[in-house]
View (spheres, rainbow, N blue to C red):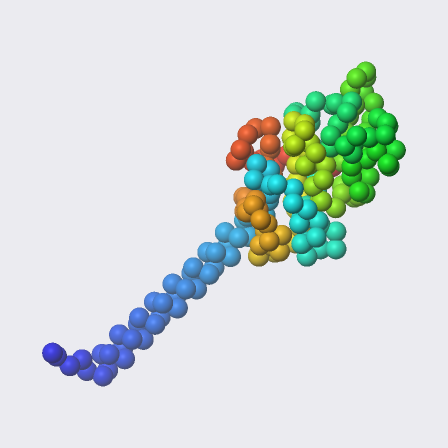
Length: 194
């Protein structure tokens, strides 16, 4: 066994340490750069409307809002996202509405069609309407993170607690899922029309 001179040992150790530090720094910068180009979003095909989006967001009012994919909507008279099960009557009275904040607006189009729009300023992201639409309707309503409200936390509190792991990172250029295009299809469209 040959002995390594102390000077060579220290020189090699210093070089190795510099390589590790440089590699770690480059990795950290690359991770920050890739995180800056991505944003949090909810995959509507994984989401089970558990209600945690309304309560787990770090903001006072959640950045998660209901969006309406009009290309999928049936414009139903009896919309299961708007009405409570077994409504007293088919009118927009608060006693008949499923949304706890009245964020869904119902407007007559022509017999028997109605248009439903989301007032995002009232939406708390609870997912009750989405659950009704997905369970008994065609799924045209779903939850999405609104990036004009989201602070894009590096570790999103909702994502961390999501029981279905429905929160994913998307490229900032195409930050929304477009449900009528199918699973995994993203885009930059604003489905709520706001």
